[in-house]
Image (cartoon, rainbow, N blue to C red; front, top):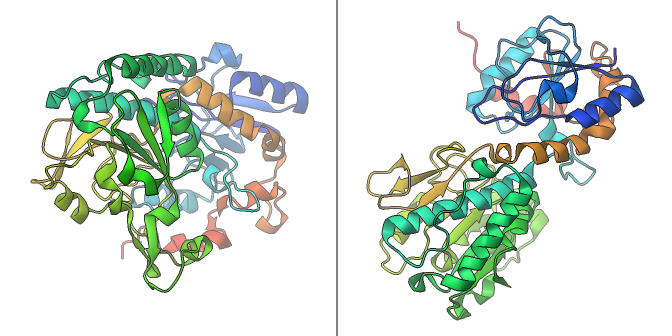
Length: 434
């Protein structure tokens, strides 16, 4: 049918799009693909930029609908393929009713997160943009935290919000100004040596480091944390890999990355707590499931907070798995109120930066803070796949479905049925009432 619908986003602050206007025009002119634009008042790109008349999608007969975030359960229709980040592959409780609805109506679900190459590396992602916005939000929150404690000098105070900036060039300028303040004002003496730790080294971490690296800094190895001299005008950067986060439970065994991926906490224990006393800021950029040990546990942070010489101020939890790798990430936050403090004594979260406990930046849709550029980058990664998606017949048996291998492997539900790779999700679905 060669027609694709572009779904509106409805979550607060979510203005990203899967395909930007320039690419829509190119796909129409080169491949004859028609696009239907759902009316929206919160896209980063206007309908005038698309040059398409806005039309409701439900009941339109459009066979493929593309979006970004989870969709309302009342929009799904039989024999329509929906492509978006469903956040269902871990059996996330909040999205199981949506998955069940997709199955009940006989629709198809394709998840960008499962579009991977032969080595399992994601091909369609916003991760680097999450990292860029995440480091910005985290350091601004750090400025507010230090202000609240009366710790000076505080070069992080007064940073613009990423939501206010919205453009990458302006974000880089903001970090250049921050770097100048660090050189001229210096860092709080009681926090030097000032260390920011990046847990992970993938797309999210690389994005965060790209912006961070604008600042005056030195890169160090985790093994060097005990030996750092206090530098008043630069930040130490330390990147942690899996071998710094876990060790084999068998003391005679050596760390093996593939073995860790396969066996997780069955054979490995978390050891990242050894490094926490040296960190002022922790950026959590890892992919985590319950198969693996946590990065920082509740028990550890409660005990650590009793230490008078603790340095940790803020955790930038970009991965943002609630009660996941960072066990005291007990809720997600929003772009306009990005941080909460985990109140150690009360075992609860409170929005803001004041109180007895670590501050956590836990915005769960960070790329929306840089919407136009993150959308353009995302759209570019999709371009080569769009013609095949537009021409696919989603009414044939799954074995006859003609899609690129990368996208066919990302089909979670096909015409109301979980595909073979995703049968495990059956256990998480809401049970029928008797």
